Image (cartoon, rainbow, N blue to C red; front, top):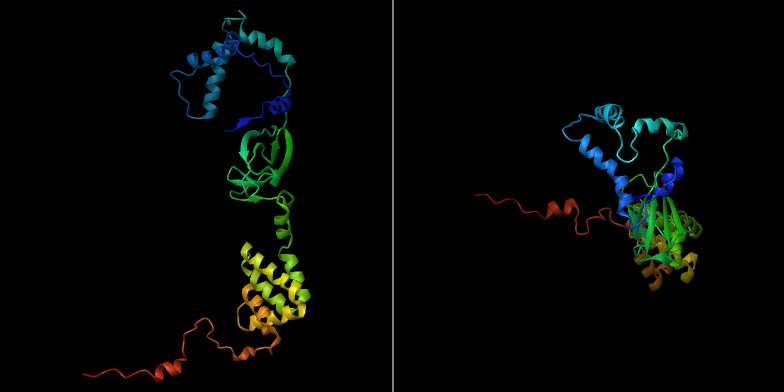
Length: 290
């Protein structure tokens, strides 16, 4: 459930809120009597084809009937009192204020809250907590126990994820710090074969591929850059650019063997059980004749 920010509304338009005290229905009734009068004297038996027609009828009713009657409490005509108060009124702001709405949200296990079909990050220490969210036209603010804990620009696209890396747990921060640019730089330092293999792993831009690419780069810590480059070269020669392939080559020592001949690889690599067309037609039997 969303609620309007009455304090910001008051401050932006420059007026004071005179709230009715609790458990005092007599004073509340005076405030609500204007709504009852409007519903009983203006709305019945009226129809409106547009907003402009409604405004025209409302203005005519106020100037000719509601504003000239004798008010039950003040015993004066409302228009006469308005003439006295008009000089004290301030002009409306040239630009309408950006009024926000408040709502309660919960921080999910992925360190994000959901609002208006979009996701916004919050500090990982608040996972499972309920926060107050203030949404304006251009920003999202999150509060916990009256303290501001996160701010985001308002997303303009449904399903978008707005994430501040510092909000994530330390291990997750380290994972996302080793991003595409970091991986390509590390692979280029190892060698051209490693760089080519990492580029193929990142070709789909999927987070699982990111993890696999990180795993390939980290193999240099155990086996060294030279062996990793040789293993990547052998994996590419076999058209198997996968982390598991590179790791198996290093673990079995296959990278220390002579490099395989790329030209010896079959050209029909995507059809494992295919046979050359000449062999297929040579073994074909002639059709039976009756």
